[in-house]
Length: 203
Image (cartoon, rainbow, N blue to C red):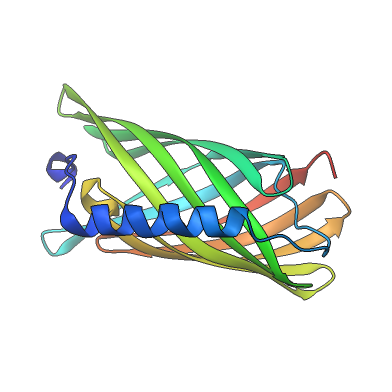
């Protein structure tokens, strides 16, 4: 299963890339006077992942670390690191950095787009391989109440099991700079769910 992860650029990826870049430019030039969501934060969570392979599921847990830093009125940079011990003889490490853009559409809704670079290492039965990929995401962040946020994204990664994925989260504010959240990702052959704590700064 893990051995099938590979780097490949396809026509759907190129089309999605063009669309994402055009969207990012459009969002960057779309401004408003509404208050912004927080785009500068550090987050720690527990994440459970299920790989679907040959009619069976492989499960693993991890404590990934994520972070983001907002700059100017619309842009942010982000990064994350994950490591999964899938079996006794297989593990998978993945780091990602990227650039994103956001803009308010209403008092309680942001449009968000991001473009990231993934570096991963697959260790399987004593052999190690490196893989690189591009990660594109388009989505929205919204506010249900002053203390309850939601988000939803569609993403594409040209790296094996992680290709097309839909993700979402609910985030509850305990204090002005501390949130707890529940996150879910549903992909072609990978599903994840997690709970975490997000610490905002620079607000």
